[in-house]
Length: 165
Image (cartoon, rainbow, N blue to C red; front, side, top):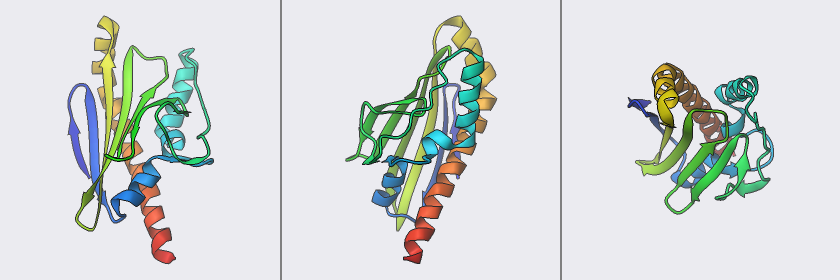
């Protein structure tokens, strides 16, 4: 897995054996039931933190269709862009935070598989947001790492399932 970081962003990327369309279908799955962008451990913890901070602590179910669409609300995320042609998903967190938290995922062809790139960005608001940005950096890195590992696990399960068929 490749890692990159700036003060505002934490980025992870890895190559999986799935073809880009199959990987994309996992990334943007809107099927009912557990989904990586709602049920990954760091996101469950973040929902509890939001509840303690008197935020909305939202837990909306996926829409129950094959793919997410722009405008959907899932977990505590709002889907602001689900571009299926370029395989680019942008989610914005609806949590109590001194800034805007964005999760972006892209899939691209890579050899016989797909490269999956996940980016978490904090765009701080005001002085409190700037301080939070500095203090939150280690936590954001941990969340990015764990979220990417969870997504890779889901993708590899899909690959193992399709290989068994």
